[in-house]
Image (cartoon, rainbow, N blue to C red; front, top):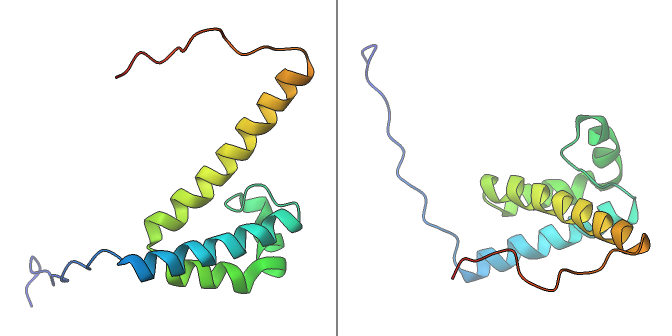
Length: 107
């Protein structure tokens, strides 16, 4: 092999319906464990030991059954959704009201 040669891997096929269901089930079990143990951000370096000790096996199962990009996306989305919901609850507790119109004008 020369310096500029590279080995090409065949692109992986996207997960079929059964594989997606396995992924989502593993994700849900992992997220239930996080919720039970009051862990909001499973990607936070400060929480990694806590995640590993309390939900390590479920995290490994989740990572093993899902595409790597999905694993990161699901964890980021979970944290963002929790943060958003808590912010909405805080605003509502302070008397905030929904806007009488939509801000998004996309069709």
